[in-house]
Image 1 (cartoon, one colour):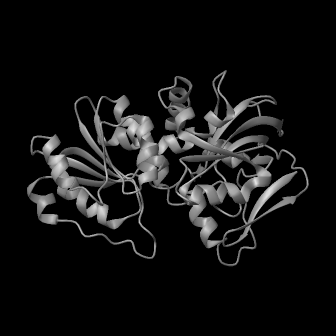
Image 2: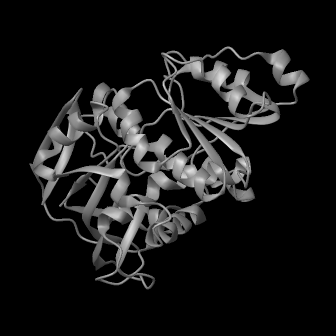
Image 3: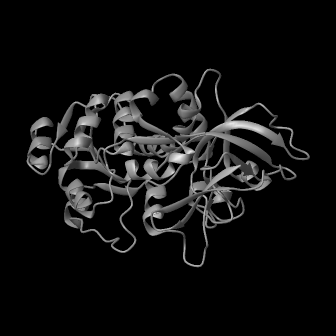
Length: 346
């Protein structure tokens, strides 16, 4: 079978490797679609971890069960499944409290070297992944591309659940990449008015297809003034920082209302993880600032349902698809900032 190996910075080799067999307690999935996300791009730019010859990336996947191992009764050949990357330990402080996304020993399919990813024609899901990972059946009539969108949708859904986004809220989304556009979709579905702040003209154009109430170019407009104008001088109820830029986190505290919420959804670069926030404004305004990372496994099932019901519009989110032999073009397109979701199909 063909498998994509990341062997160096911006270097991927598609290799022919032996067909996998289902291990005891595990399955073999024929991968039909796998999205490329921001973490895939970061790893692509950096190359494999130090001391690792090559890794198979990809974790936003959907496909068909080809084979099942001994004692597997939950799945059968022919099942359509979607997967997400998180594999929790089930034993630590956080897992015992159902906070699986905060697991002290969290590992990821397509990221952790010993858990090869889905940018391949076939993927082995071990018993550990089936028990402590995130695997759900797809609804009838869903395409595999739609199934691959469940994973990126999950963290957005979990974020809005925690923020309590609701009817009448004004939500500012800072950043209109694929995740920012998903935030627009989910916030609107909850009855919120959405303001998008995005300096890239290309991404503002792409964000327009999701019909946020306002799109602002912060490089040429005063975002703070526009938010005050649109909220009667009060400020936004919720501000979501959906990009890796520290300055937007600083500004988010400035434009949120008293008792409002600032969500640090996008992580900052590991080499420069610090941001400056007005702590007096946070203190006297009783503003909540919190991080949002990953999700509970049940959210993946919810995401599949919302995609099936077209609440989350796959046709608007996926702008480019490529075959596995076009993997270089797929990553280059995703990195260029002119696409939303790029999906590799096999």
